[in-house]
Image 1 (cartoon, helix red, strand yellow):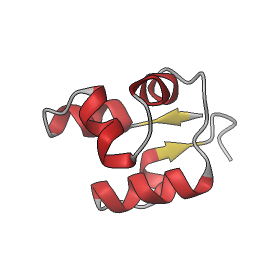
Image 2: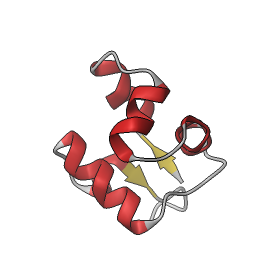
Image 3: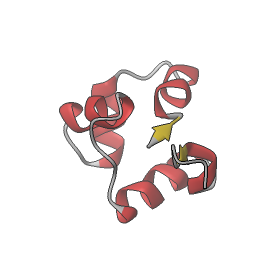
Length: 66
């Protein structure tokens, strides 16, 4: 799954650790999501969307193009 987390995080000058703290997950989880090695749970995706004031679809995109 493609995502814009890294871009959104950079716009706020946040480190992976700072974003992890905001979302109550580990820095390793943020790294895995940003690099596409891990897809976030639906509750985590909603939490990220609320944090950045965007819809889930604006942050996370299905690579299949659906």
